[in-house]
Length: 92
Image 1 (cartoon, rainbow, N blue to C red):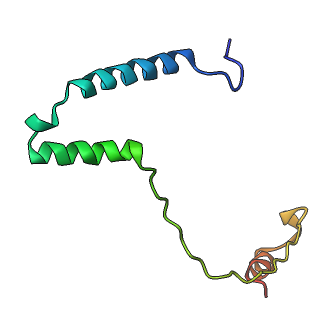
Image 2 (image 1 turned 180 degrees about the vertical axis):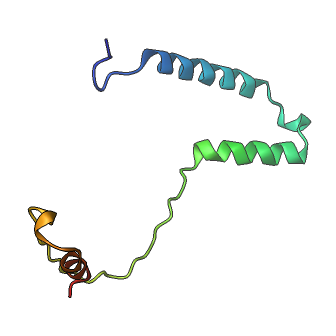
């Protein structure tokens, strides 16, 4: 039986909690004084992804002019020959 819509997935929340605990425990054991410059920079690079929200690219678009479309409903294609259909498609 599926879980109710909007309810929290119990297994996913348990896994997230265990990972958070593990990360917290590892973080507490880190000593910046024993880290190399490269390790510190990598730590900052990874940590910033979780602290600073990512910026989404914003695309500036030119205003688009409204276009008019004509829709012709054809009941059966059998009524028309290939030339008539081609002309209708090409709008001639």
